[in-house]
Length: 355
Image 1: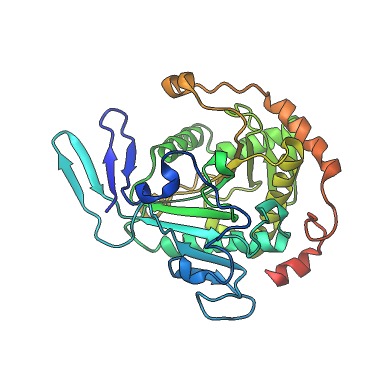
Image 2 (image 1 turned 180 degrees about the horizontal axis):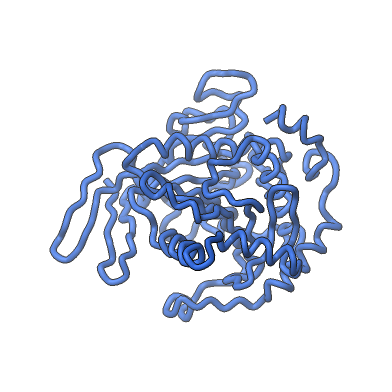
């Protein structure tokens, strides 16, 4: 059983997960699944994964059989386990609790060689809808306080399997980084009675120096104090506290801009490894934090975090966000504009019916 332990100095919780230590890729050189090798996420290998907890199937087939469009399964090597009662304990000055949570894998496509940016917008929307439905379902479990959705793309970003997928982890505590974000949002709201991210969106659209792209509902830009080169944020233009509040038409709009953003990054940086992180409102008693505004961070792995960053919390970014935004805007001239990869190539009404 995993265990959560609290650092008594800074209040940060860590997960001690013996199950994760069983993964062959955790220690020593990582061997990524080869394109010609066995892949448990490919159709026909459903019995090689834990049973699916959710799927989108156009053929109406049975669970754990081929015919799915998006498939969600429990992680075979979970950081936290869903079974059991949440128990808090003390060990002298230290606090700990058993490792209750959920750890799931969202398999984005049946095609082994396709990346998220390569998928049609309608398929990306199916993936985002699956994420929304899993958050909605898991939020009913009163043991959980926060749900994190993330994507590790490429070996350098932490991916141990090549087949394109996202992950979801539900935790019984609100992570410290999220508490810091909530406090920042709250301080601005108490001072100005406005959402700080709404103010940032307004200022970035007015200045236009760091904006990369936008559509009717969402905007993509390089943050003013970017920690990493080409760090990119995507978020709703209008205030929305929780990711799972998105309507179906908003999911389609978000998927189109997300797909375009990833394509711009691929064109500019030659398909780099990256981490994708969703920041959304916590669950249950924290749910009333209406001053929060959800957003996605995309962080290409172009530099390494080293001693100075770990020791001080300062990040050294060699690429000004204004310059990164200029490069990403220029990449628009090289984006595919038709066919299966084309952003906006299909009529929105047709896409919505497909999703």
